[in-house]
Image (tube, rainbow, N blue to C red; front, top):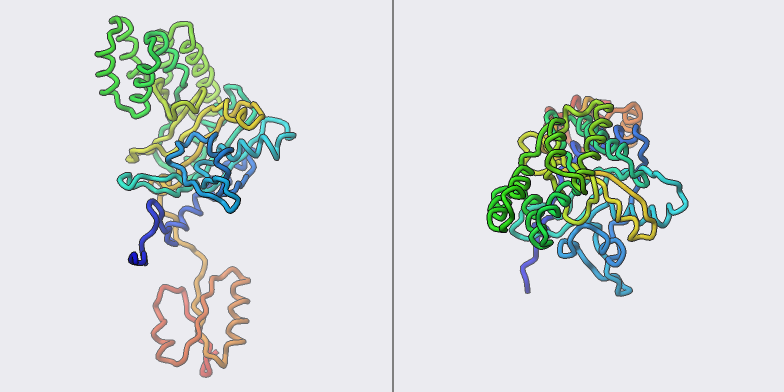
Length: 391
């Protein structure tokens, strides 16, 4: 018989202790208040979804999903993201609601991890979805709201990098005929492996001018001035149209007054084969992994029968916890009310009265004066004793 797993947890799962959870709830409230002021309404979806609907439409790889069989023999998954379930809702329960629709969520999602990865398999996200608006101003709204969310959460130093998937794709299509080779370049950009990108560039046998164009792609990261450099590199095709979209987007973001927290990154790729236009990632100082990610995904809704453009982002709450200041301690008075059995009725009535006044009251049945004395100085603002000797 296998040894009982008394203290172990399933791979990637963790306990959240009161101190950490209090900070998480504080951040969730701050983000909620910020997002609601932009007209977004909260939605909640089931933790379990059918694999044949949400699972197959999700951008998450199948081998990273938790799959189960229900009693009817259907394959279900623990939701690997919130965007796909929301697309299902908008295409079914909200099929008669006029677009655009603004929704937000604060929920846990599940992604199976390899034992060696050391990452969480259950994690929490706060995110928004703006569905039914294909304009550049919708992209600007999502990015500006992401900036204001990070400010509301108290992140002191951060940058949101902005790119466009068609710029990379268009540039690669201009100079490389083989799709498999183009995919290798995309993978290197996705992994931010610029050394591998340059090594591949030296081996594929394209002319020197094409090599210079692709090598210059790696340096297209910075402020507004990078737009002119990208124009010179792009030409008139798909990449050129992407540059003009970014230029228009930047104008909208300047109107929001948030460009000091932004930078342009024309080689940014967040998720292969999922995003269809503008993409963005948020980074905080001293945090090696993205704090948030988002972008335009105009093809997802069509998989549920309601074709519509959409954009959005998700903030990774676990990472947000590590880059935000500690929550100030509660200023609410905390009282320990000790009582003996004979004083129980009066003591519990007193506790209810104090709680109604906004005081935190912890009650405890005690047996003698020695036990009462031992309770003094345990981190409470005061101790009330209701015994046979004193009220």
